[in-house]
Length: 175
Image 1 (cartoon, helix red, strand yellow):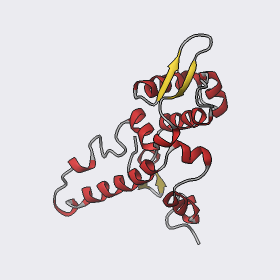
Image 2 (cartoon, helix red, strand yellow; image 1 turned 90 degrees about the horizontal axis):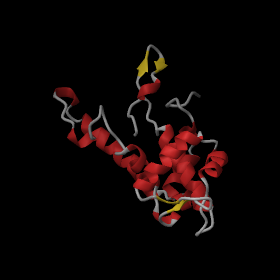
Image 3 (cartoon, helix red, strand yellow; image 1 turned 90 degrees about the vertical axis):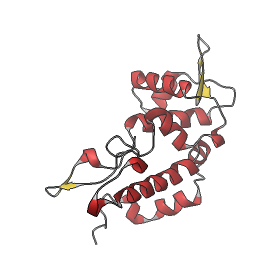
Image 4 (cartoon, helix red, strand yellow; image 1 turned 120 degrees about the vertical axis):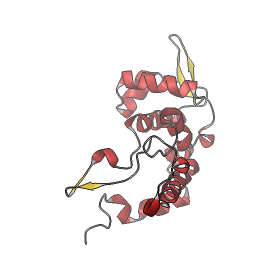
């Protein structure tokens, strides 16, 4: 889930209001990247994924179950068992993975942004939240696992990532 807003409180930033991708989604995407670089018909054991990405094994097991139920991963049991992508890496977007793990890409106080109605002076704030969701969606839906593992990221992602201002948590960055 993506929490929206950075809210300064007493000259500090409250971490619970930062825009964030959950650890669970981050781990899921990283696990999917390991599967994406495996040979097409090769299964990868959960222990190998956990070790390759330094993901706690018990946490990973639950993530892999969610990914299997969401149609992202196929699993095989037994001594020769393991996991593999259920679809080609080029067809799985980061948004697909985040939605399977955490649900909608942007929620405001547990509601979808288009469902919000604010009175008076804040009447147009839902428009901002919808626009923010669209921006996040644009990046996550345009970027596939194949883009990540090959390093050939979409032009829009590269353009944003090479801007030195994107690498600071303070905006505008200090001079």
